[in-house]
Length: 488
Ligand code: 6PG
Image (cartoon, rainbow, N blue to C red):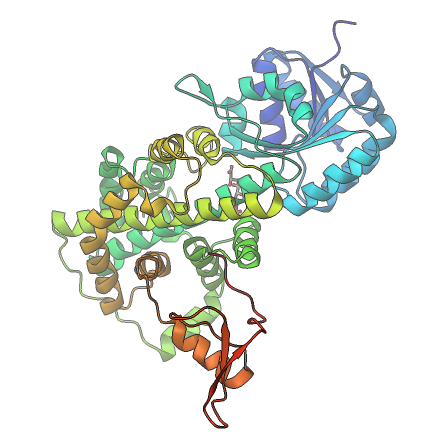
């Protein structure tokens, strides 16, 4: 039969429908199924003429409309709904069929699903898809993980559906099991940090310099020709420029200042804690969203701990450039930390991630797409293993150049009581990173004092304990610190 479909999509909310349309636009036959049949009908009524679609109201018909081995993309809410769809599909599938989860699933769920399906002779691909509604339709960045042969089967479709940059698709095989969803999770974490840094720059302009939204928009617009050039900077300009039809004010001024979240940033931060990776930028961004959510408390606090906005200082071009440079340096730190986290995960989970390829497929289609990713790609082209991107030539030069501005901006915000957790924690991380000898020697002394946790000496191998409260003598011990050494 020639008219069997190449790919099936289950879940036709906007992301699923747009991904299905994308596949159809590229010439693939697409089977459609949605739990609520009226949604399938609506998608067909609106877009049915855009390509070869085969809609079904029942899962059996849907499965029967697909060429074998079947490739089925699940586009439903992450968590239990994904398991529920897989459960329903299982009795209808044949050995070798491929179930692809294209949602924002937790990577450990993808590890579990991959193993469970493998036991049943089925293949699973956990595929991160980034780019929002528009990306899904016009070309997202796609991060598939699972068995390589399963990826090979879907690669011709995935690479055609993905965004293309300089003739290269923004999709590649990421690694086994949940590796694809893991990389998408870190992408989202970086997205959180990037957006937090942008909002902190906005707050500095608004609160310290008393600028209005349209004026701030022109500043962000000007950064298009700087190394900050990115999708997020572009849409910041758009959002700041928008006038509210109802009030005539900038729309951003009537939006409630509470950031919501679906979980991927939090997962990234929690996983960094598990791996022992200092992921300060992303984690501060998650906490900043949490604090923003405590709006009533903030309202009460402002009454008790009055905040006085500084009388608008006039910003010189040098002041504006300083914020730009501080933002860039902090952004480098956030990316360096995210890439360090992926390096650690790759080692600990045995995934063999190719981080140069990750940078390559993030150059287009996804939310954090940016000119800057070319620099990360170049760094990995020159060197396979990078302990920390900040130490690579291009980034090292950039942070050194930005350093005076970075300190000035953080100091200014602290002086005026403007919270800049991502700017300041990135600077602190940088300052901690470049100290060959930090202050944790004292910390080890304290741990040994109250818990006999032992310490190591600079001048001698081995583990030592001092009998601080007894005779004060030091003894060598075979017992290493129970906490173990941190990730080096
Ligand atoms: C993307 C986005 C997408 C989604 C975020 C929003 O890459 O296309 O990251 O996945 O918009 O998950 O996340 P929050 O709701 O947590 O901000």
